[in-house]
Length: 354
Image: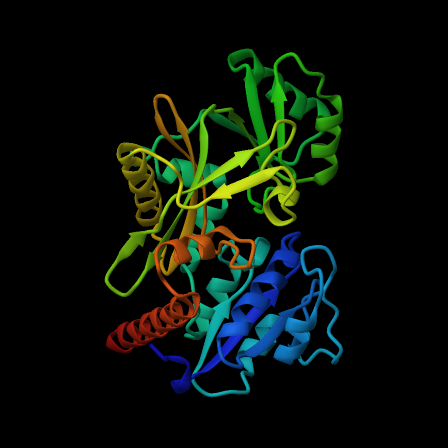
């Protein structure tokens, strides 16, 4: 497929979330294969910079160092950039992760303007981004761990919620309610002191979800649309060394973790994992692609969370799964743009019929 010739592809990356480093690394992987797309960097202050592909590819240590464009900003806000698009027939490839780039905000902006974009729509993006909302929407479709949500709160309120969960469970997991890349992730045993963790969470000023820890094998499964409905990709198993967790450093800096793709699972476990990922993708109304994190416990598969814009960096999991399934990364990217275009045409037709 060569969909890019009939349109201008704009690769949007960056943003103000703490996942912007991952976004830059994703942009590098995508720009390398998309055939000279326009590259728009969305700065943390909201400004939009038009940057050359060579500048994106030349940025070193993307996971650790902020991207600093050499040219001045073109627009002060993304809304103004979308309202004054300088090209005809654009299609956006969203290389964004976290925050407004993944919670439905950007998707809503583009839907309102009839601009095609990759990935899920605003409703599915918002539903999946809020881990509590996602679990509630998928109730009856997948199995999830027991959890409770704590809003932005003082240390005493957070401590009460933690103590309540620890009365019921030997081990718990604490993670931001709406964030990714495993930042702000904590594990806590009943016998441990946790004042330091409480202080860190209170300082972050983020809503948190506190979950029962499920002991098992940590799996993740990508789901992609290829024009004829969603298909699940090969399962990845995450092996974590003692004393480590699958946090930001484990994911992107290779510290204390290994990713096995395809996972060495029985036929029955593989089938159950694939079914869980497909159920989550369709149950949340996702489009294009997603990645679902799962825990394989003795009593079955537990849904952990779904990412509507998972990383596409050289260290990311979906590219590994695509390779294991014999799907070229370039073909995947072009198929996603084709899906975005088709969806945009469908929306235009529905609007015209009203």
